[in-house]
Length: 225
Image (cartoon, rainbow, N blue to C red; front, side, top):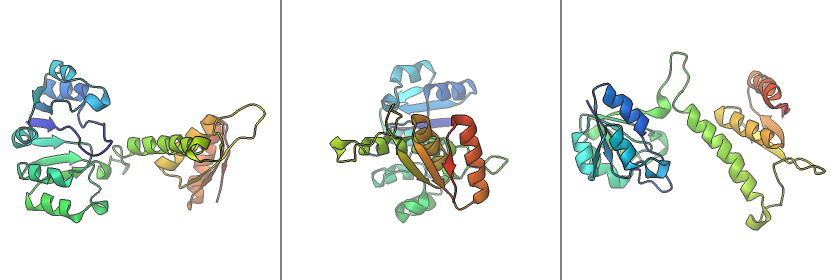
């Protein structure tokens, strides 16, 4: 099987669908791996690393898609990439799709070209969990606090409140809405920095669980709703 990945073109998207380690594993299993030149640069992976892993580097996205049996990406194809999907007709696309939140035209293109589209965010394990979505939710939780702290700075017209603990000053109060993976990670991150955290969730049992876990892990108290 030929498995390929492209350089992401979405604004500020620096991730890559296939790492050199992943490429090496696939090659060792007997697959052919194609990687667009420069695809991993934004994630800190050089073309040389992919080459050493046994992958073949290709300049043309069109050539990659035409030869691929499975195309591995990070984000949903943009309108400028729809023409590429015609070359993927009858094959498999593996990426985050979020079809309910994007232009319906993408769904139409996938259907018209008979593409088997597997969305990371819908893949479930044997316990009904979402193992491919959970890590991204954790990233979002950390970044929510990181950007929130940045926005609070005076130079960004914030209140000048810090989220970290400073001796002799009152800790910031962070309110988190929702106790899913994003909310839980945001609460843990803020509490770990030294903030007072209040978490709101409509499920009392979930709040009790989160309150206990965060107390045990960080010594922080989460408010309940």
